Image 1 (cartoon, rainbow, N blue to C red):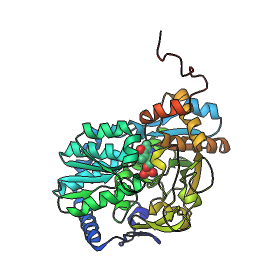
Image 2: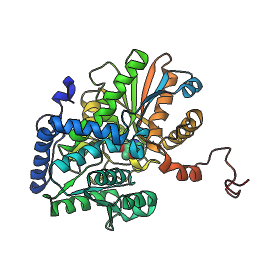
Image 3: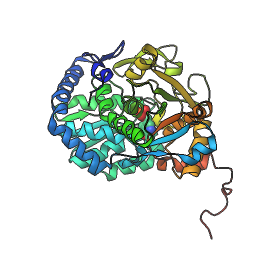
Length: 413
Ligand SMILES: *Cc1c(COP(=O)(O)O)cnc(C)c1O
């Protein structure tokens, strides 16, 4: 998997990408991280593991997902050609299953019986519950009570798939408390259970493992794009929450001349609490066991964040993104606001018949801005997920201009 010079050399043996990353966790957790790392290096690099994962990807997930030329969108924008890597067509409708199946396969090799994780909007919880069902493992998802009330369909999905949803009722009752609760549950039985993180974040080895499991997106897309056009794309664009879908596609192009754009949620304004753009507005700091760029209050606590896309509202970013952007200058930190993402959501739906996830709509929105400035070039967008989960919210909160007034009977004849 790690055949490229950059990937072979990063992270360093201690899990650092330059000054970012590492594993600053309590000793009992550090020992578990070390065991997972060792298992990943041995089992994860065995022929048997690699073949099993390939089989799962082809026959269960539906990989490879296609690269698609968005002709009508390209013609409407009138600039660079726009191509989409269709991760929305991956089973469960997003890229998250790529690393969940990898993490769960490793867990099954290790003889673990239970997968534990937190979830915010529920997307990671659903993907992990799916992986647990596939492998016949127990699954325990910790979720803040506020999120449980907000994300009802995903809570139902997890329960149908056989997962236990543990409500977290302390503090703000959202993602941060859910992380603490999931870690605590994991530490009560680290022998029989394993913690499965949802992005390229957390202590080493998770940012590396999740990147490697997501690298399939970039490996496929690079080859497909070349087969389709004869060239490499001039630009690759992906949204960045924690950064797993972006690292997945970027990782195949780091040694190429292709420009890489990580699109952060600019939300509704530039003040703390109005966005979740860590690379754009954040500073060096520590969160959840790793060093990266964080959005902090003056007192050093993690800042409240906002994005119309709940999968992007995290007050930090994976350490490798911090390194590629701040240290190496290899990636650009770009952004799209709530309003731009909503506009892109409707454009892609109506011009191409593809309803994108609101997270992915941020990448499309920035690609549209970039396309206008780069005629005759090509842009490959990672369409990280489909928008089924967002349709009710968008239609009610940002109805299309030609929508029937809410008082009209819907679907009447
Ligand atoms: C969770 C999610 C994201 C954000 O996660 P990353 O780790 O930044 O990729 C993006 N798109 C979709 C569809 C998601 O579900």
